[in-house]
Image (cartoon, rainbow, N blue to C red):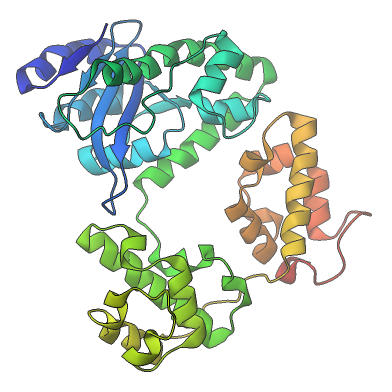
Length: 365
């Protein structure tokens, strides 16, 4: 059973229960298809071992949840988007003490792993996942949807206890807390439009002027999509912006030369695009071009995973690889360096007997 909250009075009635909780389980159902910012369609909560509370944000303001979510310990699973959505809705970031997906990556369960796989591995429980792609904007919500939504928070408290024990046994409590702290910081961070271009496929292959064009085009696209609250790809996909930066058309007719170019970019948006291409600003620093260096560092991180049991995707995410290639191992957080080991740092800094040729790591060699 669960409690569906659709009035301010019903929400006020459960707030004391949430405020008293020693642990709050949290999940959300949201849609991303039609907007820049994901829209939350349901908030699922469980205070300790009580019945789940399902709050309908299409019927009631979520503001009163800011207090308990920011003050009480919270457990989530793969909660990065949940935290971002609630930060935008409430103005606070939930007080997450454990993300079970991150925690699983520290105790040999792999990363990322779904909640169902984690429940089966640690609790021997098989979860129903039939409503994964359900339309959560429709009302009334079906019994199947409500049951699915409640099940996620029902399982989180048990997973919290099991994973806390595994983390303590491995002596990794501080590292897990640091990784979750990074997640919380990302949830409340202002997007860095100036560096978003670095995530575009092929960006490392562009010349100076082309990089400047790509950086400015991506910053424009993201800013406009955010202000209009439309999906990035609905305005201009990454591949389209890469093509514009590479070709640098000088007229609306030349913009249309790509047969996959959305018509609105050569009509409504052509003045903005052509203005950017004519004066993109100074070029940003070049990205490391050698994919081999990236792959070698990923392989070294996988060696560390075998030694520590911590998933290499957590030890050295792709974004961190880019930073190491540019500036050396010292840019990594202390918990990552500690788990990757002295051998990793010596390898990157060129002091290991097994190292890379001079210049292979750009400025870090």
